[in-house]
Length: 556
Image 1 (cartoon, rainbow, N blue to C red):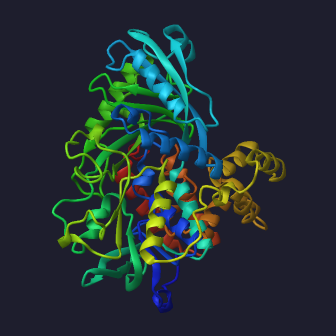
Image 2 (image 1 turned 30 degrees about the horizontal axis):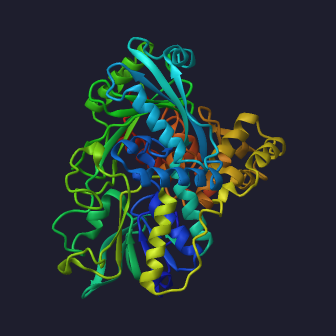
Image 3 (image 1 turned 135 degrees about the vertical axis):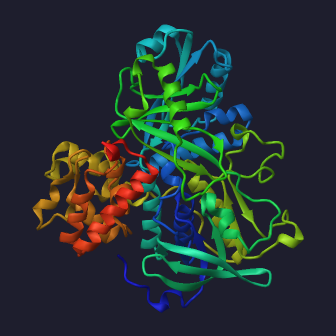
C-alpha cells in the first residue's frame, strides 16, 4: 500500500486534473503529459476497474453503426483500430469474425454484402484481409456447429480483440506517470470546487488512509464514465443529465460442443439485437445485452433473466451447445456511459440500439451551454469506446490546450507505442524472449500476451528468488514474479487489483478463487504484507467476486 501522501503533493496547481482512470481518463492523462502539461489523474477505485473492464473486449470499426448512418464514427473507429494494432501489438490482435445470415433475420444477404463493402471501403488503410461472402455450405464447413436450418449464408471479415482492456488503461496510466503525471488510484473526488463561475480544483478523500486533501487545477476533466453526473452534482446546474447509460451483461463459459473457432456476430432471434460469441482467454465470452439502467452504478450485475436470454440465444444459434445456467463459470455487467437524449445526439433517439456511440467532449463553458449553466474550467467526457479512446483523448487535450492558452507539442500518441509495445517488430522480441527467458513456452507466451516487452521486467523480480518463476495459479500459469511486479511497479494496492486487473488470474475458469490464497502468501513473503492484511484482502476479494461475478466456483 502506498504511503500517506506528503502535503507537497498538492502544493502547486496542476494544468489538468483528470477524474476517472478508465481507458478514457488514462488516455487523456498520457496525451496531456506527453504534450508538457502537468497532470493529476485520480480514481475512486483501481485503474480500469469500471466500465473499461466490463466490455465485450473488442476493438472494432462498428459494423452495425453503418445501419444508423454513423459513417464518420465507423471511419474513425477503423483508423483507430489500426493505430492500436500498431502501438499495442501485445494487447490488441486481429480476430476473425463470422456473421451468419438466417431466413428470419431482418438484414438480407444483399444488405449485408453492401455493408461489408462499405466497411472495407472505409478501411482502405487496414492491415487485415477484406471480407468474404460465404454460401450456406461454406459457412457450415467453416463453423459446423451453427444451426443449419434456415441458414442462407454468412459474411467472414476481420476486426480486432483487446482481451485485457484493463491492461490497456493501465499502460496509459503507467506511461503518464513515467512522464511526470501524478497518478492516484483510490483517491475519491468528493467535490468539484468552484469560485463564482469557475472551477478551481477538487476535494479528495484517500480511500486507503482515510485522509482528505484539496488539489487545485486550471482545468478539471470529468472522465468518470457512468459516474459523470454524480461528479457534477452541485457544480454545473443542468436540467437534464449528460449520461443516459445502458447496461451490458456478459457470461463466460468453458469451450462447449459446436463452439466456434472464431468470433460469431449474431442477430438474436428473440428481439433482433446483435450479440457475440467470442473465443477469449481460453474460454468463451457471450454478450452483450443493451438495456436502460437507472440503478446503483456501484452494484451492476447480470440478472437471471439476462443470463437466460444469452443462453437461449446461444443454444438457438449453436444447437449442440446445450448450455445451462449451471455451466456458466461467471458473469459480469457494466454500464455504458452513453449520451442522454439530446446530448450530442438527435432528440428523437430513445431506443437503446439507436443512441449514438460517438463520444462528446462537453465544455461546460461552451457556446452551446445555456447562460445559467456555464462553468469555466470544466470539461466532461460523455460516451466513448475502447476503440476510439486515443482519438477522444487527443480531442480533449486539444481543447485543454486552447482553453489554457498554452503552446504545447502536437499529439504523438498515434506514433508512440505503449510501454509493452516498444519492440519493433514485436514478433522478433517474442521469439527472443521465448528462447532467453528459461520459461516453459506456454508461460513465456502468457507473459508476452499480458506485459509485452515488459515481460522481461516482470521476470527480473525472480532474480535471486527461483520460486517466483513457478506458477501460483495452475489454471492460468501465472507465476509468482507477477504478483511482486504488480505490487511494486504497477500501481496495484489491493489483492483484487493484483488478481483481477494485473495478472488477470481473476478471469480464469475459477474466477481467481483458487489462486487468491497463493497470491496473498506471495504478498506476505515478497511485498511486506502482514498475515492479517493478507487474510483480510483474500476475504475481500472473495466477497467482491461472489457479489459481482457470481462465479460457479463460489458455490461448488
